[in-house]
Each structure stands twice: as structure tokens, then as C-alpha cells.
Length: 296
Image 1 (cartoon, helix red, strand yellow):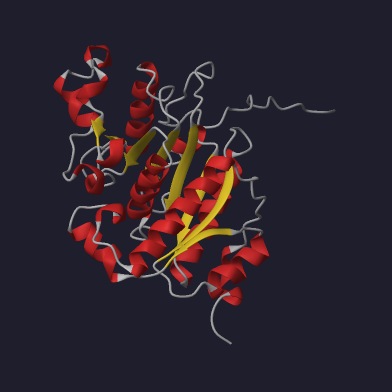
Image 2: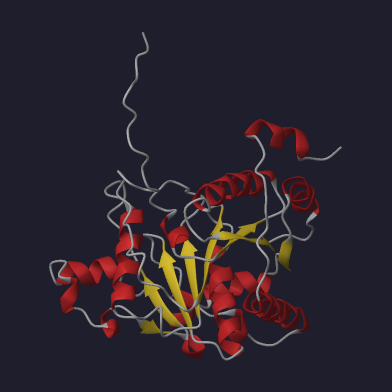
């Protein structure tokens, strides 16, 4: 006697979670990048300066901060802006009452800035807020009116909620330093992007080495998993000072080392605009990274 068990129907990605499922019929002509990496690695610095670099190339740029701390764009706007969730609360979450100028602010060199915000610490799902912010942007056709969209995503959280930007991006960039913890986090992000790529168009775009004099550990990891480093930014004091001055690197007093960093950002923006082939990486087992990295 054969017993046939009823199998539950296969779920779509994110079904049953608090993720916001976007209308598949709503598309954008912009090139969309999601920037990931370990918490504190410099994603906001990288995202903001990359946004300016794109704008210097004549592109219309929108940067979306996806961190409840809502500090992604303050070097562009010189202040902490009201968040999407703040504005929605003011109208009792009736999004139809909002206009783009209520939650979109213009920053340095014309870069448009949005901070998704999030619930109070320890409550709610920040990923849900990101999904709502993107939904609002699409309803107002803001993703259609820009050339480049950059999502600056919170830390190394790769749960369903904070993977929400991967539903909308074509390329995911990973910011890392030349140390074990950053590369360990990068490996888990690679696995998350690989999982999302089974249901969405997002693919790995490459690695940005940040705050690092050397890249030997990054290079060792990249060679094993199949990644390439797109740009390298050393740990310079001018970068630290730019954050304190609430300014992008393109606004700081000129110096030879600063000129080199600016040129690297422009080179990175040019390469991303021209298009990069997706990188077909294979993440390592967590335990294997312990054996791979370190000094002999």
C-alpha cells in the first residue's frame, strides 16, 4: 500500500514573511545597485561618494538609506532628514496624501535623497519599512525619473526583511575591509544574494575594498569564491574628517591623496554605468573561512 502525502504548494520568495511583495508589472529604467557589507564598514560613505561620482558623470541619482538610524545621506544633505516612516505617521499612513517633496530631499550636486527610517529599536521590522518606502517611490514614478538608484543597506543583516532591496536591484555591491570579520560577513551576504538571484534579477556586481592599506586577505577570499574587487579605498584621515564635516569627499579641500580617491570613485561609477558582467560566486562554508584566512 502506497501512502501519498499532500505536499504544501511551493511558496514564492518572501511569502509568509513581512516583506512587501512589489507589483511585478512596475519596472524601472534606472540602473539599481544595493550596497551591502558588515556594520560600520563604511557603506554610507561609499554610497554617498559613489552617488556624487555618478552625478559628476551627468547622471540623475537617487540614494535610499535603508537603516533605521537614517544617517545614510547626511553628508549629502548636511542634516538628518525626516524619514519615510516619520512622514507616513503624520498622515496616519495614508500614502495617497503624500507628495514627493514630502520625503525626497535634494543633496549635494543634485543627488536626490530618501531615508526609509524604521520602527523604534527592538520593535517591528525595518525591512517592511524599506519595502513600503520603495512602494511609495514607485507610486510616484521616482524610480522612472532617475538614471541611477543606490540602496544603502543596514549592516550585515541578511534576513528576509533587509534583503528587500535585492528584489529591486540589478547588481549588489559588497563593501569589505581586509580583515576576517568583514570577509566573514561578506561570505554570508554572498549566500543571501545567491538565494535571491533564484527569484529576482539581482546578481553580484563585485567587491569594494574599503579602509584597507592592503587587500591580500580579500584577494585570497575572492580567488576561492569567484569574486573581483572593483575599487580600493585606503584608510585615509581625510575620509574620517569628511564625515565629521558632514561633507562628501568631493567637497573637501584638495590634496594629492584626496584627488586619487575621487578619481577612484569616478572610475568605479564609470565602470558600473558601462555595465559589469555578473560575478558567479560560490560562498564558502563558515568553518572553511577559518582555515583560509590569516597569516602563515
